[in-house]
Amino acid sequence: DARVTQTPRDKVTEMGQEVTMRCQPILGHNTVFWYRQTMMQGLELLAYFRNRAPLDDSGMPKDRFSAEMPDATLATLKIQPSEPRDSAVYFCASGLYRGGNTEAFFGQGTRLTVV
Amino acid sequence: AQSVTQLDSQVPVFEEAPVELRCNYSSSVSVYLFWYVQYPNQGLQLLLKYLSGSTLVKGINGFEAEFNKSQTSFHLRKPSVHISDTAEYFCAVSGLSGGYNKLIFGAGTRLAVHP
Image 1 (cartoon, each protein chain N blue to C red):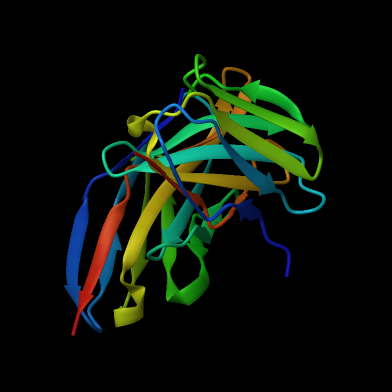
Image 2: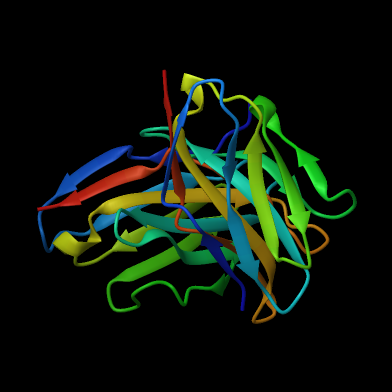
């Protein structure tokens, strides 16, 4: 049963610390999305990649957030330094882009709490 | 650019009653439309999708949705709900935006099914 795997599931960290969230997309998928979910803002698209290249990261605060795909089996989202307002659930989703649409399959999310 | 509006933030309904969750979108280009469901502490799961063809789309768990291009709507329906349908439902649109293919979500509708 193919699925998107995110680690860790939960992370509590102190303000100012670096946080790294990892995502293993479904094998064969060529698109990876990062979303942030909060009560106030809902699901916000932070960044997305196709064939490991970043296509759009306009939703991501550039001063502290960075997203990369070092290889086809790993996507990372880093926050440095973290702040309490970064507390949220971060979702990774992967999909196969074809013919103009991408159906996204979601991981279970990483619940980040910055204290 | 495209956007999605879910007209109801919460929908309470009694078990075995019908339900409709409303979704309107705006886009200057052809779109693909999706409904996802999120159970507590879970990621999002695809319910159904409209890519092309028949405007009435059937999905999992007895849900269906109708694409109405003239009204730019994609409302989700179920003729008889169960307690287990209690969850948050997200409408999403995918289409060319800025030359790329973003997947944008609405704010979500919380469906609460009461006995």
